Image (cartoon, rainbow, N blue to C red; front, side, top):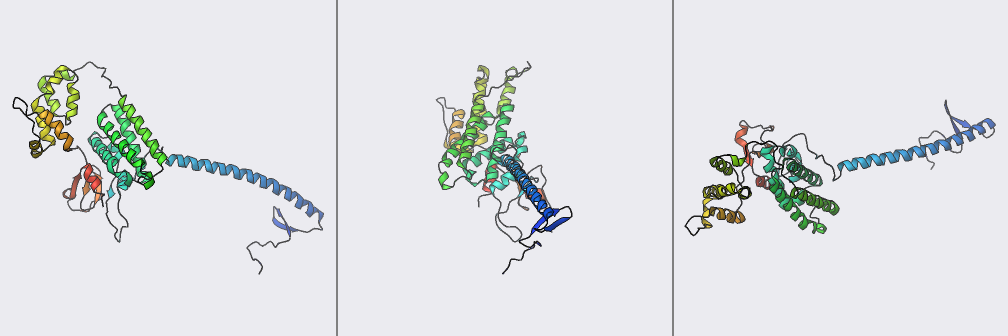
Length: 358
């Protein structure tokens, strides 16, 4: 059966492309033979030219693809976030919605880049990054991993620029590095998403960030105004009462002898213990001195080793029980309830993690 195609030129004939279109040639016509030869020559030149253009266009396409790949690879400095700064948390499939929300998806959708710039939310985000580093790294997708590392890099850069909150970030990096050391050893079991070389490179970045934080030098202010030691002792004690970490009090007491004497105040450590721990926890670990006084400072550090500290944040993520939407408090979400404030509950960092444990 002959092949019937869409080409109207029959096989076995010679055709020449002219300005008026394709024309059939015969072997008796010399002029046509000359035109056919010239056409073949032009066709060969055109074919070679097309090959060169094809190679150039191919190289250009490869370069464009490489630039696009470099933009989306692990070294990308701009995290990917959605326009909406809230996310609908659904834990099962319905007729209207298929699938469920994951921790990585929520981590990508919420506005953490702006949150780390806000002093009220900074500690909340750092605590959330620490909890994810402890137990939730295997559940993050590839995009969520890149966002996590990019946000962590921005947090480190903010600490280096502001010279504040150095110790919490050091603890966060140490926790993340220890977790990665244990997970990378189990790469054959598909514990982490991604190539092992990428995770090794990230671990090298963590070590580099730790070294930068270790080498940080606190710059003294240039203006010669009032300092903490110039204030009355009562005001100094009031400032110390606002500190929620006993290690900050110990560091403050090492500045000078006068501050060291004030940081040994028993009432200061008593309020610190009562703020972080319950009365039942305190009664189980009472420590009495030779003079019959309670050693509140020793009790605080003893309780810190076995009991979790109280967590209190200026601003947290909120969850609407009516709409099942997770959002920051100052970002409006499309709530359909008559009284949206009654349906809103504040979430601690651990509550945020527990929200995605199915």
